[in-house]
Length: 486
Ligand code: AMP
Ligand code: ZN
Image 1 (tube, rainbow, N blue to C red):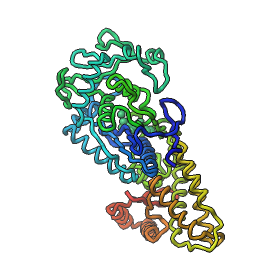
Image 2: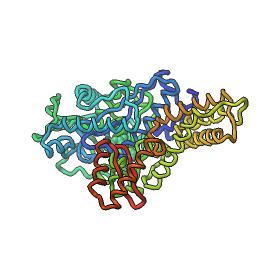
Image 3: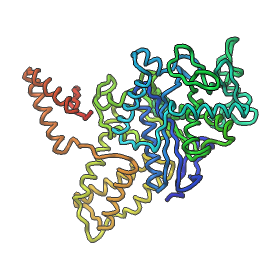
Image 4: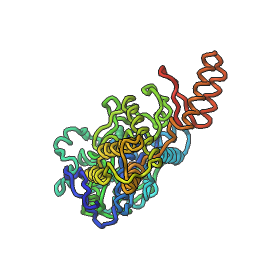
């Protein structure tokens, strides 16, 4: 199976056979979150997509070193090399240490990843923990003639680099177009060229997060952290570099330039970019203010939500789209995913109740083959899920006594579910609302409704608050009351 995996490579804009540099080892680097605020559901989609990729590579038997960084320094307002950094700004507003902000949101991020059953990476390096490596890299880039210092800030010289390299190799954009879309330098600007970007930034007196360097006190530019950390842990050229599509034009373009200017090689063989989660067609983002927090989605506490959805329903919803397609958020789509996820889990619950027959009406080998074909075709999870629903149909048919499976096919079916539903898709069995616990919840909800109808609001509030203390959130709507675990 291994040799058949095909991955769409942004760098070449084609699907390519996946051949690791040093099999069975695979180096995977994914740009991680910036931890000055909560991750929104869009960020989660990207990490769930790479979790699928990581899980499938592991399933194929590769020994994956998965590095996903934490950006905890030097992230300035906008993409320009100026303004306040977001950590210091928030720390000042809340009168706490910047590292308290970092700690709070790193823990929050880990908690959300656990709820979504996202496997932890092998290494999770932080920008602040790798200042020395970043300074070394800036020094080498300067020695190689691709960077210059002005008043304590070091800039990457894009014009000089472009003379011998293709700066826009990742996006194929024209340099002239880029220049046309970039602000004029003006007399005050220290940069030599409009496209130059900062590798190291001089700290203003009010800037709290600062480190000593050969160019005075300052802090690293955003792009250099990923170049320094990926090469430290995975080597100058490694197998796969990933991140959201929005990172390709600037962050990843600059990472490639930095690595070429420092190590004279491409940092990664395959560049993988995940598409965006959108709300009414617009990209979900922190700055646009249309970002759902995962907790809001679980509880249903958001004006755009009709009810809450469990983490596995949301994970299933994300996996029902291919990672390179946009995924638009809607209550209807989530309702459909909720139904689909429950149908899948209900069928799996029946598996142990099936008894083998002497003959088989179904050949599971074919389905298994098609599941691999789907995943080998650039991790096509929606096609995989469609194949798994064929397995669901078989389970239900056999359970209803309308078909049979022999021992061998029944065993294969169980292995198929374990491999693809649990290991590869990373779904887990949540307490279904149709089992005993669900029935108990229905009973409690009915009691609360009776209390409400009797105008006994003290009791109905008491039930809601007690459940909340137990981590169960009720959501009332015109269709009735639903519950979800927080
Ligand atoms: P950030 O914390 O903003 O640096 O983003 C962390 C990761 O989430 C990056 O890989 C982004 O490309 C990705 N990302 C941001 N917005 C979205 C979105 N709406 N849908 C999917 N991924 C996103
Ligand atoms: Zn990065």
